Amino acid sequence: MTRLVDGYCRLLELLIALALAAMVVMVFGNVVLRYAFNSGITVSEELSRWLFVWMTFIGAIVGLKEHGHLGTDLLVGRLGPAGRRACLVVAQVLMLAVTLVFLKGSWEQTRINLGTEAPVTGAPMAVVYAAGIVFAMSAALLLARELWRATTGQATAADLVMVQESEDLAHLGQEQAAIAAVQAAHRREADETAGDKGKPR
Image (tube, rainbow, N blue to C red; front, side):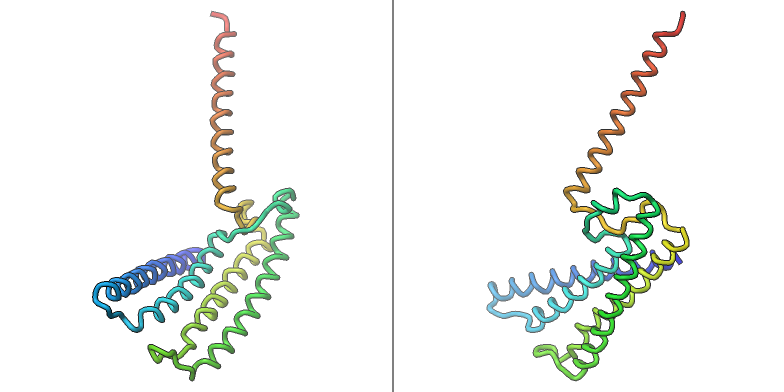
């Protein structure tokens, strides 16, 4: 199961890279054509917006799997393993419920917009709303998997916190951990040196 999820997320990361590359080419190409040749690619702006929507939702799936969404663990960090597990289960149940509501709404919007054509490409607007369906289904499966791991005791201590602090705080925490590791190594070295000096020759 883990291998399947990892493979799926690697595929999503590839799709994100391709979408970003296509957006850059279309937007930059359109700018060059407008300023240099007084022309442009008509569908560029519309397709770029659609790719941005899809890229955002796909990235949210990968972020959920990697526990990369920003949040705060101020309360959870002060609890013991049992308290963290209980909070995680409650949070996952709530997120799963919200995701299912989101899936229902996305499905309805996709059906409604099947007959609505985009102004430039003429493609159905349902393509945009389908991104919500892909996200909601993927997120629901990931949350159900995490909920199963939490309730069966398979989740590790690191898995009990599904969010991370802001990047600045995360880097600060890493620096503090590195400094603490260096200080501990120096203390061990000093203790060993002191022990060697105290031994009779």
